[in-house]
Length: 223
Length: 248
Ligand code: HEM
Ligand code: SF4
Ligand code: FES
Image (cartoon, rainbow over all chains, first blue to last red):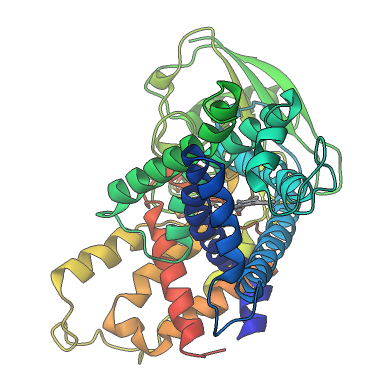
């Protein structure tokens, strides 16, 4: 069964849809957490600490966090590998284009591919910046996420990278959420309107929610 | 009408092709697109040149043989087959680009003719039902609810022309395959092979080198029979159901 799924274009697309939805659910939780930054350093840092103690005493310190991290890494890798393999196959299936070109034909496909690449690079930068601190601007302090976030968004490139990636994310979710519904076979004629609306609302809320943080730092609301 | 045609000419499957330019005059707006090409070919024959090869059969919009990409659109600007497209959709003095279906799974045989037998092999993989042949069975022996009959009929309209593949930026045959799967899977006559049909047809589709679906929707826009994009969703549902049932 696993082979049938992985060897089929329809199956691989299912892997993309499921991993995409796992990441999407994570992002909903992530944006809610991020917005706590507007309530001051104490609340935000406390939340950051809590993330490490979730599930105690059943779980040990940071176990839950690592569990979530593992699920996310699996989701990102499965999603990116499927996207790469499917895209290569698609390009091979249509090697010569028409002399008479129609630009509209591949709009969604192109935004998904380029948007996906932007998101992939962003995820790497984001982890190195705010989780490990490897590429952080000015002394990264473990356990002081509030200050780290303010530092990142006090640089012009931090803001540019972050805002560009969040716009790409919005477009990705806009087509991706509706797309995943079709892949998983839950779309239908009567549900189409509702699915497209939910996709747009989700895309808008997540993009606006994430972008609020750099805008907050830039305008001095968060400092 | 006087028109400038830019037509894809290719001697055979292995030759390099290129666009060639021709002028045609005396075209009536009541002619079909294929009659316009017949006019061009008559002139070419009189001049001792090789006529432009293109596929056609019924010229009634029901066989699915005709297949031209006209100004970048599979079957041209109207939602119909190339044979049912009329020259009134164009204006005097227009330049019209005419190209063959493009997809790795549809190699060009000559000029505008491509080999679409990959679609036949998808049908062979599961686009049939198991039924005794001979006299037609009693119509009421297998009751079919009206909505199911309508749904099956809507999908049975697919004529296998391949415009969906030609229009798809990924050269995917998902719309064609989904039309066949949905048509037979909803009917009691198709029930015995419900799971193997969708698994085998999708596997054959992949095997033929068609691309995957990115839900761009170009296929449904190009389809002369109005097979909707949501048919692909229906096929995905059938496929996942068959996998869950462990039929492969
Ligand atoms: C590693 C970074 C990423 C890459 C390279 C990537 C790439 C892609 C590509 C190319 C597609 C279109 C695939 C197709 O239509 O065949 C896609 C679809 C999708 N992506 Fe991503 N993406 C990434 C990150 C994300 C994230 C962070 C989310 C979370 C919201 C997400 C959610 C989705 C969803 C839900 C789909 C639709 C799946 C389907 O059509 O069934 N992706 N992705
Ligand atoms: S689905 Fe439409 S475009 Fe595709 S083969 Fe059938 S009739 Fe032609
Ligand atoms: S020639 Fe038969 S459908 Fe056009």
